[in-house]
Image 1 (cartoon, rainbow, N blue to C red):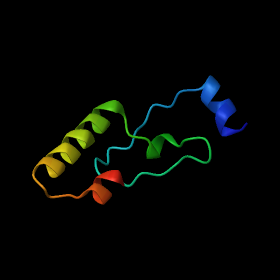
Image 2 (cartoon, rainbow, N blue to C red):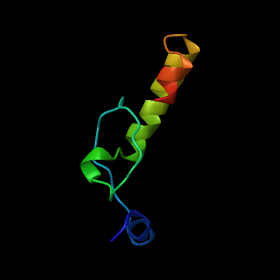
Image 3 (tube, rainbow, N blue to C red):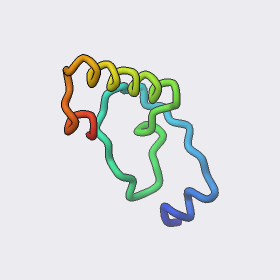
Image 4 (cartoon, one colour):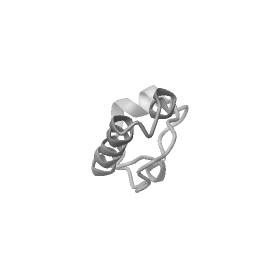
Length: 64
């Protein structure tokens, strides 16, 4: 089953608790251990906003 077909029929509940990690584009079905659940994503966004607002990160860092 390809990624597009998988996406139509399944949802993934993430289990990754890592707040800060690099972005990667999916090329296969997602592994729940590599997907962050929504509360962790909210925490990550707050961290990035804080770094940006306090000038502790540039655009290239935030974009990753």
